[in-house]
Length: 145
Length: 199
Image 1 (cartoon, rainbow over the protein chains, first blue to last red):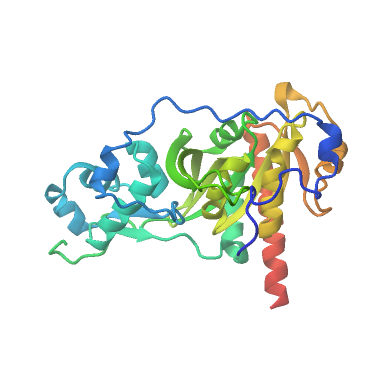
Image 2: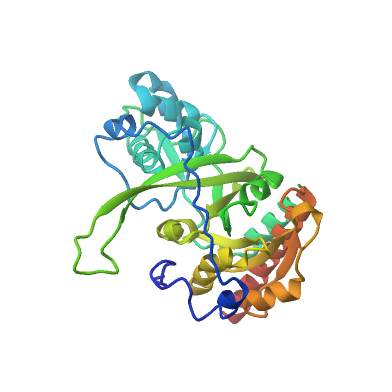
């Protein structure tokens, strides 16, 4: 899995020959900055400066263990907020969005809490695209929407 | 460290997550599409990424580090108590490319959402998914209920492989988005069954 990443090569690549002809001028509108960005300082203080550059597995679902529920009072601040939120199973991205914590910070804190036994992790399916029965479950669920 | 040693969750075991990616240019309707089928209102998460800035094209210059914030919208569909589908909308511009490795690792497949008036916005996503051999469908969003261009023309302009479906969709319409997801899942299923048969 070491394919080139977009941006590592020239954008006007030879693989899309119709690009230049159809659109001689490229007007790229930048993604606007969001107004309610998380506090840039506080979350990194909580992680003691640790951030994860590798954010893979951000869909990992965490849930509170019975021991974690009993020991919730021993936690404070963001750790406690996260553990309490995981009474209902939540993915790292949901925790990040709901508590307005950057994804890298949330990744660190959820792993901490799992290591300490407060949370249990439900990892993503390793190779879902090679499991026909899993794909059939998804098809049935989408049909039923 | 907790003194109690139970690793069991409070309620039922947490569902296992799988994910589908929705990629496309800014303003093409990714968040709308996610919201059309998600059981929760689309959420946004932000990742502060440190990335290498200037100096890549000019090795003689000092390389600087810059921090970029990547916003990602997503929704979810509960399949059953042990399986949950997440749908991630990701910005398609080149500058977000460094996030795509994490996005596509373990993904089932992708929907490339296209505005046929700005098809070049989808090229980075197409190139990436083709390179990764990730199954994808091209869904042309019908703004104001009609397609300004013929699907055949769009396919020709995108230059995708013949087996890649190029379909019309309406990001606002739940039925149309369901159909788009089903077309993708069918591609994924065909590929999985072909692989299983080849073993």
